[in-house]
Image 1: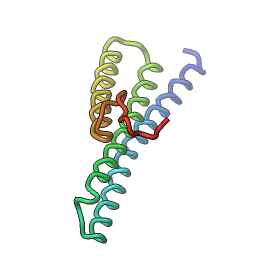
Image 2: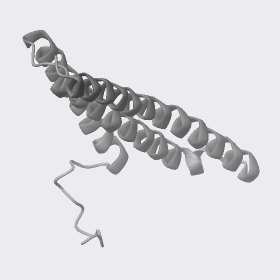
Image 3: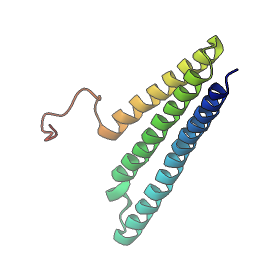
Image 4: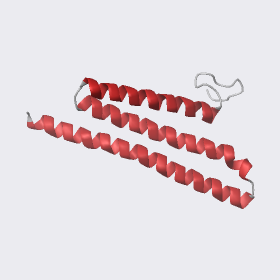
Length: 124
């Protein structure tokens, strides 16, 4: 084994673990901040229903960001540590599950399919 190859694999393993850590951190921090803001605004204005939609949207966005980072970590780990069939199958399964979750959350957040933008939208 060439020395550089071992150093590359080790650095890519750390990169993948860092991405996975960032994914988990994004979910946890996002959930905590969104929950705190929801409870704070609900307490100040004494109206839970007014902020509930924003709360769900914030939670969904946190989870989506975390899922994207977790998928990126899985891709880095699998592509740099061998293309064994079981690793590729696990990666494929993880990507399918996380893609489905991302798709479902995207619909939940925006209220429509990702490729169907409402007619009155001002987004170009």
